[in-house]
Length: 473
Image (tube, rainbow, N blue to C red; front, side, top):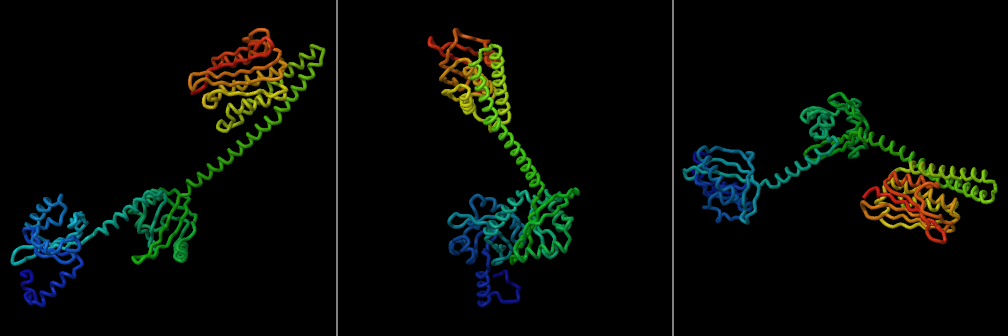
């Protein structure tokens, strides 16, 4: 081989040639000898294993056989430029190179080129290395770094000998206010005003002994001079390539803010519970006693012959009814909007509460999407009307039974209708207002509706019909 002319050994000696062949075969990389026209003249065993071709299949073929089809034309141009200025080019030139195997699959390779002579003519020795595993490992490392950079916490790696940071994530830069490059020239002592070298080394020794240490609360001083309350967690990492200490730094400011918000929420919940307790006591005790008192007074009126005294007691009963309505309004205000009873439940509750004054519990019926259509304003007026209507039945009708019906017509644009029907003494003719019904009529008119009272039939009984537009769809 002419490339060995002038060497200190005889390149024609069969022993020397055998040794050279053995070296070529033992090389860890694939080796190709290619002439100036790009024809493969020689290939070693590593090339066979890398590309899946036998030497017999490769020798005499163009080097572009080992490249993906899309790269072949460009490679011919690169080869021609290299031939005009041949020089040794080290592996790892920064190019992303791909080889194509016999089965059509591709492999990431690194190529080194060395010009030489073969039979007195220019040739090139190409050393080819499969770097697929390295590229995959690098990609995996970059992926991990990207994930670590997304972490809100600061992640610092430091050398346990000189204490300098060897790696910091983006969170550390944001947390400290220093650039990543600046942090790599620093140690934790630059950032932790409450820590000296002796304390830091003791923490590192504890981490080395246990693998990690429990969180340490301290301060981190930012580049702008502000101090952050932080929590440090140290992990010891011993590997063949070297030992490092990983320091996770968590900003406690948000946690403390969250704890304060949680405490405020607890206080608000305690207040809500107190309000609900007060509302229950008002409903279960005060209103029931007022109903009982009104019932007793009505019973007394039936035995009085003095009209003046009867009138005064009647007015007192009216005052009690007004007080009950006001207490119910307070109960409604005490209940949180999201936790108050639904309109359906409150109608049922009002009907049950009237049992003491009526002497019976009215039957309650519903028709339509009560909860989804009746809004808060309509519900409040409906309940007030129901209370006053049942109170009128208790005082004037001398009824033994009654029915309450709440009807919602349609999902949007319909009406909410409340009907109270009793079997009492009845009335002589329809009444649109007056006679104690003005409040109910005013409530209906305020919402754009109407209220009327009519007799049920010749044998007695009264129907109160209160109708207003639905509040929401």
